[in-house]
Structures are given as C-alpha cells and as structure tokens.
Amino acid sequence: MDTMLDRPERKLKSERAGGLTQTWYILQGARGAVQLFLMVPTERFEKLGITTMALDFGLHSPTPMFEGQEPLVDCPHSPGGTCYYLPSFKLAQATLDAFNAHGQDPEVIWNRLEEAYAAL
Image 1 (cartoon, rainbow, N blue to C red):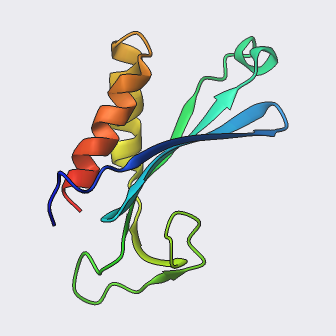
Image 2 (image 1 turned 45 degrees about the vertical axis):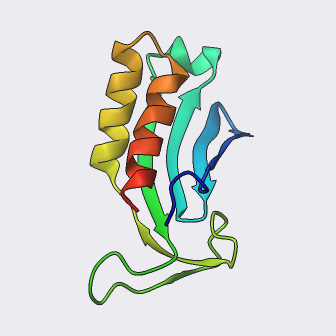
C-alpha cells in the first residue's frame, strides 16, 4: 500500500464513567486502526491516590495478524465492523509511561500509535 495515500485519521473520544473518564486515542485508516484506552481519574479520585490507568493498546487489522486468528465482530474501529484484534496491556503501559516521562505531551501517544499503524 502506498503510504503517501494512506493518511490515518486521529480521533480522541472520552466518556465519563463514575469517578473516571474513559479515554480512547484512535488512529484509523485504510490499514485498520490502532487504539490506546486509558481510564483517567477525576480530581476527586486523584486526591485518593488513584492515577491514570492504561488498559489496552489494541491493533485492529482487516486481515489476520497470525495463523488461526479469529475475527472480532462488531468492532467500533473497523469500517466493515469486523477486524482481527490484538490487545496489549504491556504496550498500553509502556505508552502511558512514555507519555508521563515526556510531560504528558499527547504527541507521544500519537507517535506510538503511528508507529504501530505503520506496521499493520
């Protein structure tokens, strides 16, 4: 695929859930999608010592990423609704650690997502 023609779109989605905000950084394009899912505490919960939690760094590919991989149906990040999904808590935590180490610059997250997207 010509990478010059594939310009993935950045999306940021947040939803309030009790004392936490669910936040998704999503990079979506012709190759599929890559997403980081974070749970961000409200100020009230931060006072209790609860910090941002990295829950998932997910790869959403239109084709299988390994032999025998089963498709995920009703994927909100896939144009056709079906993808081959590969979650990683380890990558999520590493991305959050890098984000925090660089002064919580969101470009750190977007750069990590773009690197993963390029490998799809």
